[in-house]
Image (cartoon, rainbow, N blue to C red; front, side):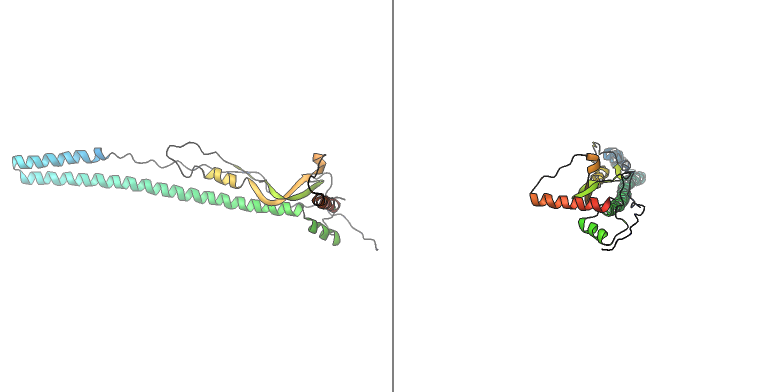
Length: 237
């Protein structure tokens, strides 16, 4: 068998996301108009009653009609003002909800990008047995790339599972609210949704843990040991 000359290349690690993203709490609810229908309708109703009474008793028809008209106009203005206040409150609630949900959608999109980066980086640095065999057969430049100076020295892939997100979400948990704000729970909801990354390689660091063990059926333990040894001889010179 002919000898092969192989030069171990400098290791270039894939970009792994890090840091934290702060999720802002929803803005305060718009002030609900404090409308008293009694205070709004009772005075003009009393004025109308008095006007009608005077019209009957004093027979001053024209004057009473003018007074009645002015009272009705004032009542209509009050009702229009109340309607505008209620519409402004409803519009404020809709705008608040739309803008905050758009903001939350942006956070969700950013976290999806970060998780995809983490998945890709984790898979590249922790190849499965088939990828290890392919590197050996092709004398890939990634052979024996790990050295004791690397954090993942003697770190081996033991399966697929869920791992903590490399990017942490910082948020304030929902507080008790008498008005029942539907948006108040959004930060905690997205925080729980993205606190872990699913279906990625899970590793065990033999160098850091020092004492490790495998428990299970003999055939499955043997397969796991073969996979671990294959990773060690592939990734470590």
